Image (tube, rainbow, N blue to C red; front, side):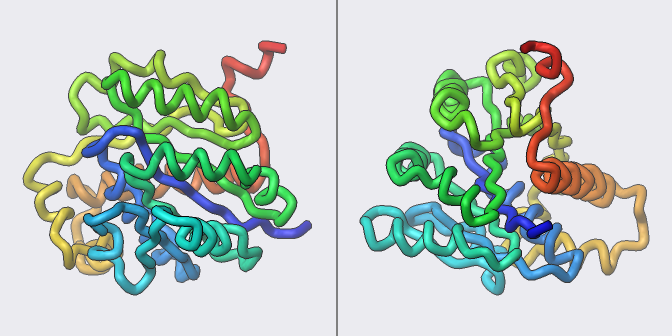
Length: 237
């Protein structure tokens, strides 16, 4: 059986929801397994992922046709190298409009590429609208809502981000205390380096990484199987 190349698009239609943090952790998840990984920072004028992981990240622009082609050409490479796209809320509409116009999801399937959108949920109405657009427009694209407990009142909006047939159930991201978050946000901070130096598996950050990395592993399994339906959807036919 041909191995599929995973492509994770980490995004939201809202800013400051923890998107880049997830993209960073996901990129280092692959690094921790000594696997090659290619990350793309699609955040105009404020490249953040590349600041933290310059060895694995390329700055990408989709402000013109040339930039769009350069990025999407990389995403359809059948090289079995996982791809992580940190997609800004400012580029959200443009990216998925282009993706829809060129029937990119279908092209990915033809090339044994396994895409998945990781959508950071938010109580704001704009976040719900962005998710609803993806839910309705890309019925063959795995879409997974992520609930970051760091955001206020995040649990109250779960009903607005229903699980999808191909993406499976939501993923919960535990909150980090402000002190730990300030450490993680430092430009030279590395999750892998922290684990290598830490002698305390009971620490808050160590436990956070364990939960998040296990969630990433679950997402990989969903992509490998090709189709995971949430329990509440299995008998809906």
